[in-house]
Image 1 (tube, helix red, strand yellow):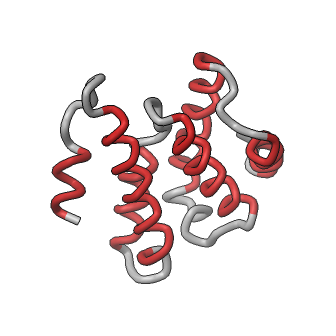
Image 2: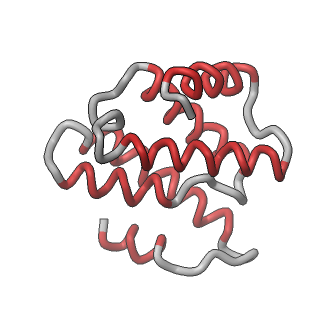
Length: 124
């Protein structure tokens, strides 16, 4: 995880944008699959991950990451819906929606539907 943190702490440029987005996506997959039920450290990792969203360089990966987050929110994942984390999830979703407005739709049908469901469910 230290090497991942080192990569994520670098400034994003045109030269490393795709690498950065793929590193963020990988980081999120690791956290969401392996740490979500393990400890208080999971909350810190999730908050760090949420602060890195949305992905802006690899739009295909951005859609995958967004849909994965929305699925977990639709299911009411216990870590993402705590009073400490939920506000940060809402902020991340608002940033994703702003990016969708600026850059054009990045989500396919399932993602758009999930965004509507989650936005209504959590009043985003």
